[in-house]
Amino acid sequence: MLAVGGVDEAGRGPLAGPVVACAVVLESGQSISGVRDSKKLSAKRREALAVSIAHESLAWSLGSASVSEIDELNILGATMLAMRRAVEGLSMQPGLLQIDGNRCPELPRAYNAITETVVGGDDLCPAIAAASILAKVERDRRMDELHEMYPEYGFDRHRGYPTRIHREALLRFGITPAHRRSFRPVREVQLRGVTGK
Image 1 (cartoon, one colour):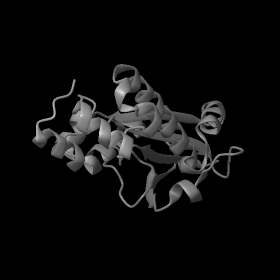
Image 2: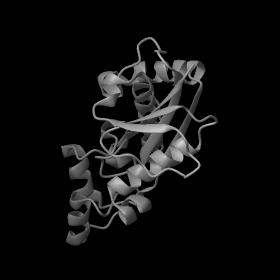
Image 3: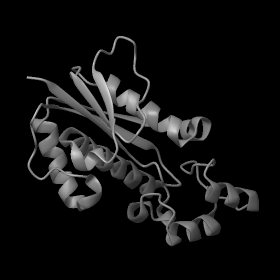
Image 4: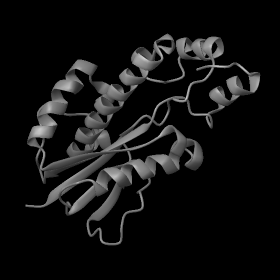
C-alpha cells in the first residue's frame, strides 16, 4: 500500500522563537481519529492527539530552523530548511509527499517520492493535518522553555506572536536572543535602543 507523507510547519508569523516543521507518514487512506488542522484544536486536544499520531503513524520526524537562521535566510528560506530537515529525518521514504502551502523545499537528489504542494493541506490531507499538530505541539514546548528563561515576555501565552502584551513587553524590556531581529517590530525596538537581556 502506498505510504503518504505530509509536511507542515508552525511558527512563521511570531516575532520570537524557531520555526518548527514536521513530516508524518501514513498509509494511503489512513486517518487518525480527531486529527485535523492544529489551529482548530485546543492545546490540550493537540497534546493528546500528538500521542496518537506518534503511535499510529508509520514514521514521523521534526525539523526546525533557529532564530539566527531565520534572520540570515528570511522566514520563507528558514521554513523550507526546517521542512527539509523534517523530511530528511524520516526513517522511511513515502511514495507521495504532500507539503502544505504553495512551495516545496529543496530535497536531496536521492529522494524519489512524488512531491506536491497543497494549499490548505492541513484541512485536506490527513498526513499534513497530523504534521501540523506535531509541529505545533513541539513549537509550543519550545516557547514554554523560552518562557522559563524570559518570564516577563509572556511567551507561554502568546507563543511569540505580535500581540499587544508582547509588543508592550518588547518596549519595556527590549529584545532577547530569542527575538527575530529581521522582523520589523523587533527591528524598530532595536533602533529605539531599548536594551533587553
